[in-house]
Length: 209
Image (cartoon, rainbow, N blue to C red; front, side, top):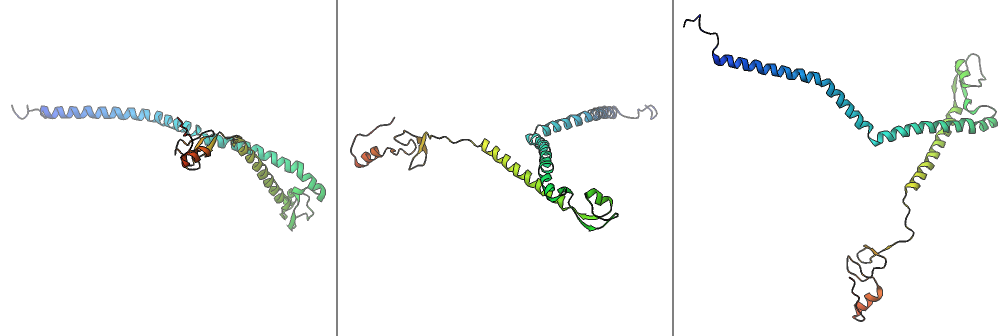
């Protein structure tokens, strides 16, 4: 056989090339599958994490606390502004929330009856009435929360039994039955008369089964 008739590659090299091509095709197919399923897995993973986050008890408790706290704050603010401060304003002759002290006059000059009026005039003021009202709001909210938490704690507290059904052994400090004559833990006689008879060696011994 001449050099022109000789095949370019041997049979073993052809087999190796075919095997390499097959492996490459399989790898490309797997990569295509992974790339197609990756978005689905990401969505499933995100949804699983989200469900685990929502199912936590503290998240639900926090959401309920925030909602109730917001509503409770609105009630407290209304109680202060609409129920308490009008009497203070009646005594002082002006709306207490609008009480202010002018540091620099604006145009037109004072007096200013409201904070908005002083702001529109360009005056610099110390709004001490609103500051005191916010302090009153805080104190009222803290006071009410204190009583609410105290009531919840008293409600959750387990009531103690008025009559105890057990007594404590004087020697091993274990709790035994109220009518027990002998401690089942340290075998000490709990009845004083029987204990005295046993110590003196007199009297009839009581056998407790």
